[in-house]
Amino acid sequence: MMKAMISHEGDTTWQQAVRKVIRNVMVEYYRAVPSLRSPFYMLKLIETYRQLLHPHLFESPIHYYTVLAKITDHLLQFFTSCAEARQSPFLLFVQAAYRHGKGRGKTHVDIDFVYEDNGTYTIRKLLLEDDQSFVHHYMQIAPAACKQKFGFYPKKIEFCSLLTGKRMVETPNALQLILVT
Image (cartoon, rainbow, N blue to C red):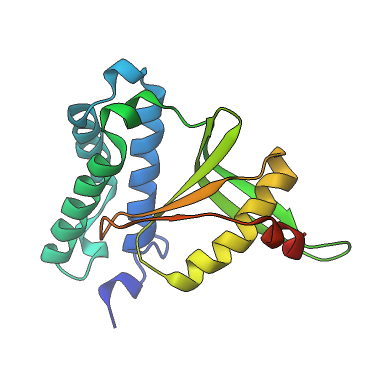
């Protein structure tokens, strides 16, 4: 059994701890004015918040440092270019509840970032694993949840893997919205 699956500090896994660090770093990063957003500022925030990552949550010290290096590299890659640093998300780490028809349950969808550009919306979802079944499910639920909760339908959804550096851009279609609402 992997060490990440063993109970530590309230059953926190390394993935949950990493997500918490990423969330803290990105919220603080976007609180800064665009002129302060830089690779150096991002590194400073990662150094500050990495203290929330306890090495004992990982399989080994090598696993801990490998994950830390990869998320640092890919946060820098995805968010610190000049163009990226100038834009600010219109929504940042929100949860949208999607209702499944009348009398049926609801699903909560985590929306990491939403950017608006000339009336079109893009969702950016950060991933730790490249899980195609998750991407497929998210593509079905997130657009409908955004339409229900926020009144917009995203033109595209970007999936950014912080462990592999892979970026996938998917385009939801109107048929998906009709099928899930």
